[in-house]
Image 1 (cartoon, rainbow, N blue to C red):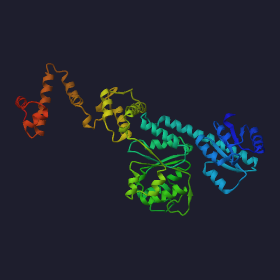
Image 2 (image 1 turned 120 degrees about the vertical axis):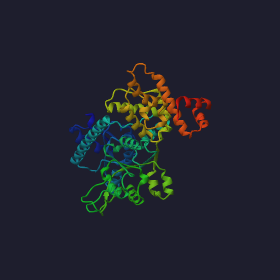
Image 3 (image 1 turned 90 degrees about the vertical axis):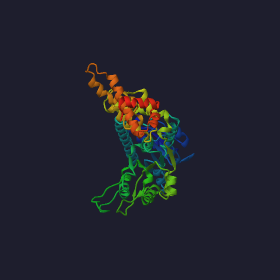
Image 4 (image 1 turned 180 degrees about the vertical axis):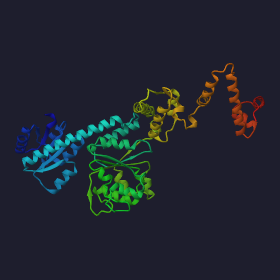
Length: 463
């Protein structure tokens, strides 16, 4: 029964015999090894591991730390003859599922094993449900540039290690996506991912939002409420725009990060919470420290590991990759006919500096996919609010289309001569107003001879 396989790491033959005799009749398949070295080699494929604290080549706690990195899916139950308080605390701090003292009661062991496998199944069901939800609304970090490959490698290294991380980068670069990727690739992926934007909540309310409150803690607190930290228990709390935290609240957050405990507003009781903190900022926190806007001790607490997200303009080779990804996503999401970008649109997209980064690109592609009337998306569909991206050709086509449609049924309309004359008259009139009637300046702006300009003004009766 591959789903019921158990790895037992213990050098005591009597314990191995007892565990196998108790569990194998229940349908469990117990494989036993006798050292840390053998245990490390045997980890792959086991969902549940029974680990002795004291082994011939070292302490089981050392291997427990490695298991959480090498096989984060595994549930580890510590078994030991050394029932000291510090041992139990250290085991649970390092992520052990449970802690049993030798000689253990067989009934207690079987109950713990059954509960552990039940929790494993529940976790897998939660992951399956989450994966289905993400299929409907995919969350991907798209990129093949060197700078993004560096970010992917850093996520891979940092995600399994339960440390505080600071993600820095301009607004719209995808800092929350990076935080979610770290959560989803960590042992905490079975727990919740809770995000809060520190800049979007008034500072007087943010403390209550984070820590929760007791009934009557402040005006309007008509009932008790838990906060975001409680909601993120056993998971990840993502604090976006962490530079905007009030200086007094920073002290309380620092205490929580150090002690993993907090007190709700209006309460004297202390609550423990096992939460990983990931912060994000679009500001230089070191500069905020210099300006006394951010606590230095909190800065160092956050800055254990920093992942810097490049601006979109710094990863040019990713721009069209992202644009096409967002276009395919929009076509699917809004049930549109397949669309593509014209050559002019591609050039416009690549030439633009994208001050709003990936978020701006995503929103622009989404809007263009809906508003474009043809299968090809043109610059005017993308940048209709940006005059710099509306060519003269696009402008004239837009203005003349309706007029030409009306004139199509009129015989001998002299359409060419009429349009050219009116466009020329309008152009000269606007330029003369712009230059205050100075024909020398107007001729330079138009790029024609002054005598030619004078002649045309008279012919077209430009006032």
